[in-house]
Image (cartoon, rainbow, N blue to C red; front, side):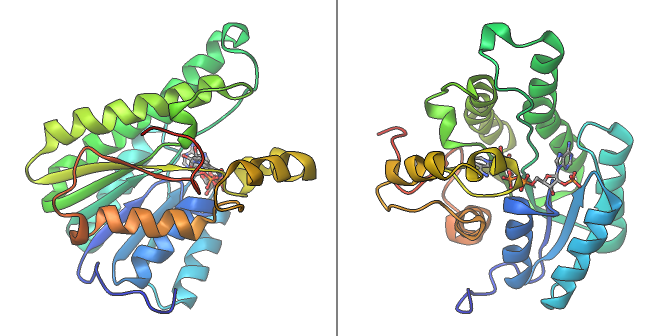
Amino acid sequence: MEKIGKRFQGKVAIVTASTQGIGFSIAERLGLEGASVVISSRKQKNVDEAVVKLKARGIEVLGVVCHVSNAQQRKNLIDMTVQKYGQIDVVVSNAAVNPSIDAILQTKESVLDKLWEINVKDSILVLKDAVPHLRKGSSVVVISSVAAYQPESPMAMYAVTKTALLGLTKALAAEMAPDTRVNCVAPGFVPTHFTEYITKNDDIRKTVKEKTLLNRCGTAEDMAAATAFLASDDASYITGETLVVAGGVPSRL
Ligand code: NAP
């Protein structure tokens, strides 16, 4: 981490759902590389605490409350960013939920709606608001999951929404070219609050680890490094792609 460069000097990056876990690490990484970062999540307290942590690392940061399903808060996120920094160069769409472990055909309609809404629709709506302010050479990174390639129980429907993000990445890359690149990161298993129900169980954790070729779980920093690469000019000829960051677990050829 100490050897990182300054690829985002003079750039402004918005990361949704970024007060902890993978989103926080992405914001931290982009910030350490020189970006002014705009972090957000549902709870003011979490936003405030994350802002303090990032400032302590010397990062220029703005914190805004934004539940990605709230149209007013989405608009406010973009408005506050533009008011403070005058531009947007990077948007990382990271928010997702996994409210049920039911089989797909047992999943309640309200849960199906919520999965679609937060994991897919709201990613589109955040971008819709951001688009008028995106600069030439800007970049979008969507956070999917390696589960997108093999949607399996007990989170098959969640995984199917992540499969949709692979398609969304391709479609938006065409729609937003040539001025904005759109790519995707598909994380493997990372111990975070989101996966606490798995990390709590030593046996499941061991099985997950053993499924990787590298014999370890991923870290939020691993995901941040991949996201920073795709968002940076180092990836300036890459668009519409998904980078699997999963320690070698089976995904696609
Ligand atoms: P996490 O540690 O649980 O963090 C979730 C963050 O999102 C928190 O800052 C939370 O703050 C915020 N948040 C939750 N719901 C939100 C909403 N509706 N609107 C705005 N912010 C919201 O989660 P994570 O593990 O880092 O997951 C991040 C992304 O990585 C997700 O897209 C997930 O699907 C993907 N992913 C994770 C893994 C893994 O193993 N962890 C694997 C593959 C993919 P508040 O509570 O304040 O809202």
